[in-house]
Image (cartoon, rainbow, N blue to C red; front, side, top):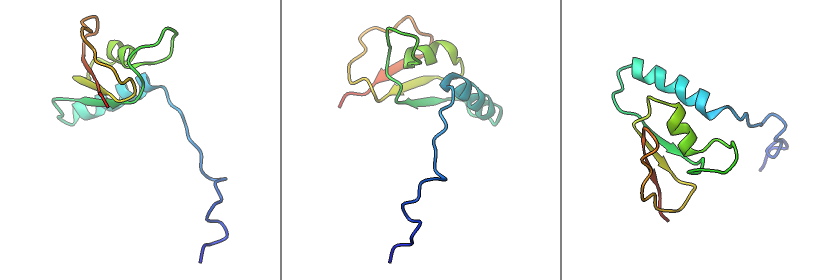
Length: 92
């Protein structure tokens, strides 16, 4: 038997936060806790023509990340030397 409020989503919502601010705050906490390598699993996309936050923007603005593994842009990154962090795009 399904409860009457099983499909009630009125109390469910999503809060979208700034990825750069969130990553910088989180990496600061884990670095202080003793973490010596931070790997970011991202679904932002590698790069956009507009100001949308991407893996590349994240790499340029979040200095405590050691590696970004992106899962949105399904292409090979041949040469991405203009970012201070190693980035990998997954291939599906």
